[in-house]
Image 1 (spheres, rainbow, N blue to C red):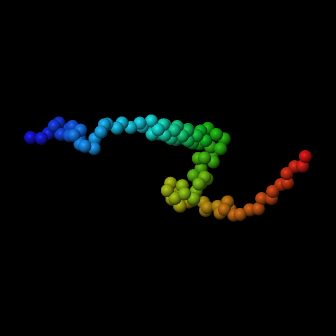
Image 2: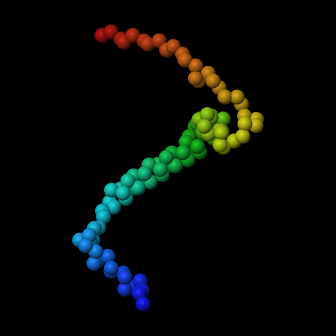
Image 3: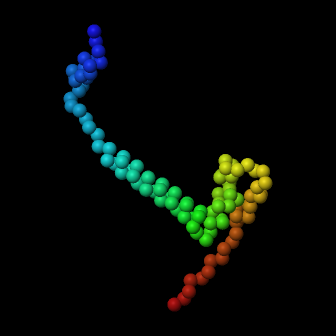
Length: 101
């Protein structure tokens, strides 16, 4: 009668098995830590700008910011102001001359 315990070390008899290969996951954990720090920093920045800054009215208004993408999933078009296309118009900004010494 075969059991899992008897076949547990059957791989050791394989001609391809030389030794155990252990991996070093340190770069993976470092990358996860860096992404976590960046994520928490953005989360804290969002809270600070949304609650504690003088521009909190802007940050809390659902009609400002990236309305081209966000409003498609977060709010329905009902009672929303029309999109302002003036920000997409090309304008000419004259270059000012460099001051002479």
